[in-house]
Image (cartoon, rainbow, N blue to C red; front, top):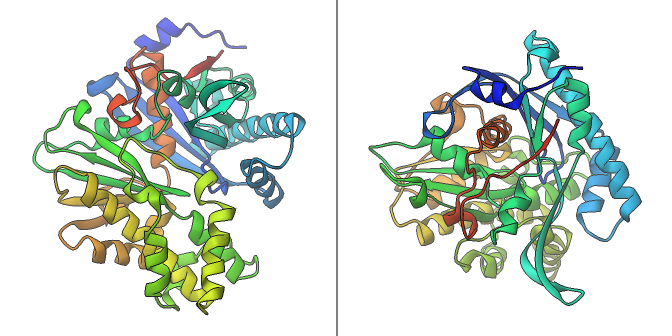
Length: 396
């Protein structure tokens, strides 16, 4: 068993760090191998390798049921947390083999975990007003398998300081994407959509970021229903391309109160999950909107919600919108976004030399690196936290 001296690790010129992400779509594990030197604004990050390890359908189904909040008790959550920990460890070992390195060469792992419940708005529980979040996937299994430190469970520290616990990626986006000569917006489209706006030559305190609304979540649910379970998402936007936007349904969706809510704000499956889709389908049935047109309209709604968020809450109009996440592979969605933001050049991460698939996994490698260096790694102006904090718990 390796013994890790954190002070020695912190002072290494270059560190090999694996970042792990499994998002609200619950489709699988993103694992990125990075080489990182420095901390804060002097950080340098190089992606060395990446893999996506899909979840077995039964695992995905169980995660989505747990995320509804009405399935399974403590025993089910405990079992799933252990299972995910083992799956994360397996993904790390597979990534090492793919990259041609030994596990002993890995210095650190940053793990987001799997969100099964996120409660950013205060609720009364047993007489106490509180917020909360729960990411599962036990880091100890990763630490045991790779014999190196693992830093995870990031969100709760921001929430303890009064923040929403999201979004977290803006910190890494500021470090890696900021420009001195232009305002840049970065839109991630995973299960939920979130945008980060980096003002021209701006400071970390000037960064604006928030969840724009649904990303792929509503579209995925409709694609699965439309194909009777044969597809879990709209591959290449082909289903949406075969339908039409229904103006009445789009207007109905645009009345969503979340869209006009001022940042800081965050959302999730708790809001845009099964019940939301059910209301959308009820409207479609009532107004004789075909299931295909419901999907096309939901795709347009995702684009409109992104554009509205940027127009309404960005103090400077971005000249470029860089799209990442699974939604960046949907050409119909990208076309809709460009139509909604004609004044802004819409492009993907790949067009500027980055990888859309690995972006969030790389972000958690960076967040873990910052925690190792005792660097505050939240953005209070984005999350609403009272002050900067070092997010992440360590397993040795």
